[in-house]
Length: 315
Image (cartoon, rainbow, N blue to C red):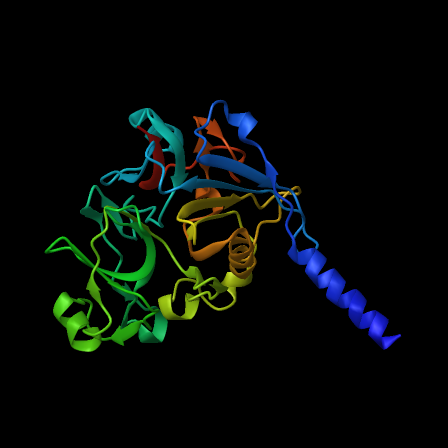
């Protein structure tokens, strides 16, 4: 009886781990042969979910992988699409401030650093005299279309982006400023100049070396047990075959509960991501393909305006 029970538990766990994906390319008109869209309505841990991912070959000569951002204002994904009429895919990217409309994460466009990390965050309450300096996960693409995910520091004065290939714990100090000199003094061996053509930041990192490894504690992105809350999500990653994966899931509705960060990390690993990064989620989660909405945004289907997006264009 015990052997049968263990066998049943093993089978159940493995059955649950398998997500069924359906190709839905036909929903979006004519697509390049190197680009595909998939949907799953499988439940996750007994909760309903609606999830999608687009996958595209970074080796395709017909595709351009890029970003876009605004200054002190926000646009909806549909407005970014209108601004970039050749965009095959548009998806929301990094976190931002509602008060200032500014990005809180790195954005690199055509090799230029156009938005920087929020490098210093003031603590509240009894520790309000202290500042936290975190290094957030960032997805980047080199000139040769080689993808990478790293933990970054933005030197806004020099327009240079530095990156570490392993997670770096946040630093606590009584100084609001945290400069490149401070970085080199503490972590000179970890950070190198990161020469990427395109980059969008977020955090935390979800998958490293093909394994689930959520670096929320190092990045200090979400407080306490917040990584286990279910929400609409957006993520980006890449496979060993040099394919980019853009993932979104719905949430906050009766038909879709949303995902925790560890749940999303496991799904991205199962898809084949060797590295993956969480981007802004919740009401910001929105992906368009060929101008058509893929997911339904959680705010009654209304797109939220955001200051940065990741895009795939056709040449």
